[in-house]
Image (tube, rainbow, N blue to C red; front, side, top):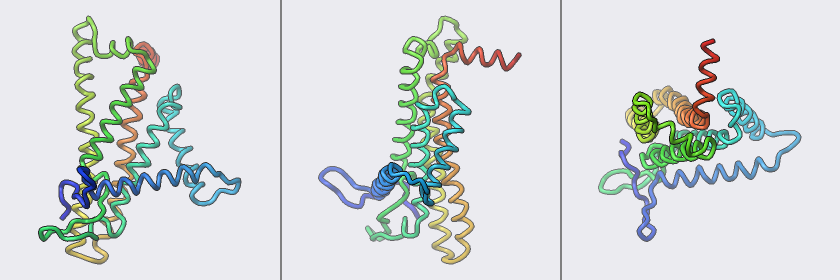
Length: 247
């Protein structure tokens, strides 16, 4: 049974190195390798370049369909969140993750576990998402327009603004716990099924977690992208677009 919190593998001074942190380092190394590999594009692309170009083109078109004006700003964040979370989710499905380790106090401590099955990782991603979104809003529409979203002389607009301001902090909770809950639950499910049935029966659950890993990465990055699209659109532009739709 997977532990709720990430387990410490070793201690460097006062810094604990957990099994989820080791997975984060591995995923980061893969991302860095992928970035440097894509800098050397070939006229006759291989399998990796074909997949990367197809994914980048598809996700960029998705971004431009939602926010054509600010796609250049939003897309790098959208794609970065998706790729990191996607690789982290799927890394936990590799044989050996969560099962190979050492025993401490009679319990197995795995050397590696999916980074996104650690609430610290998902909370960090959620905090980064929210603060970058707010910073992008201020930089794009200006401080005055940004503040006007939350402060108004109109009592109704003020009440809505307060709700939106509170929503900034509640979105951190929802983003982090949604991702953590789905990945951690899948990890527990797979470890439980695998301990009971070693062959064939875990395969359908493994395929389910493959889909869940992709979907959860897409949900987190899409919510971030939509929030960025909203915060970078001034109130008068959104009102005009709504009025045009009603007409």
